Image (spheres, rainbow over the protein chains, first blue to last red):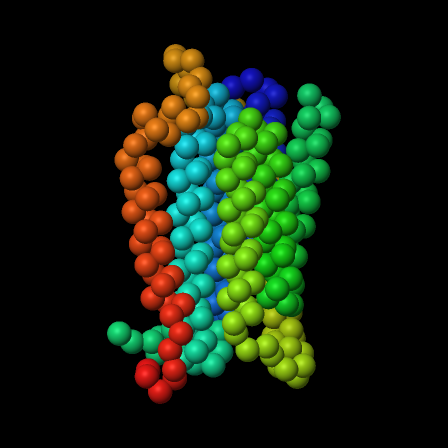
Length: 106
Length: 169
């Protein structure tokens, strides 16, 4: 890998790791379901950017773009279904506390 | 090349600020807007990394659709009272106060880690293909999987967002 590409890889990798840590921390610490979903979105965003970066550095952007489009489609479905679960939990428990999910049955 | 790297660094810094605003902000609505801002910056970075099709998807789906879904979900839930907001913000500050410290520690650790420049990437033997050709000709199973996931997601939404009276539960 040439020096310029290596420099770009290191710079992006540094911020991607920080974004990943923020998302993970948000998921672990927050008790609000919507905030946990937002943390998951941040994790997916970090991984997406990493894949695009790897495609750019290795010169295979077409393959990584195809994969990233798949990830984005799955991401939106996950977000929508998780939002629906959050709404159901809210209607049942009257709050968005993630611990209330234990009470959902059937 | 230096200006190229510095613009990328500036955009990455904006992305990190948007991420921190998303995670540490008090209001859920502002967190959603912060997520949309993060997606918008990621879109610009994708354009700069020669991935325009993925960037368009990111902009339309992640910045647009997911924000709308989150705002709809938040609007369907009960708003908190002022007292609850104050209590929650105190609790949040206590729990999320560690995040900037954690990030600074990780940043320092990452800065001092010396990664050896020995990552081996196999040489590109075939010319770069068009992304549409890759998607439709080479990764047909992915497309099939996407269609199935979208159908399952649509069914899930119909079931989960279905309005029911409380006494039916």
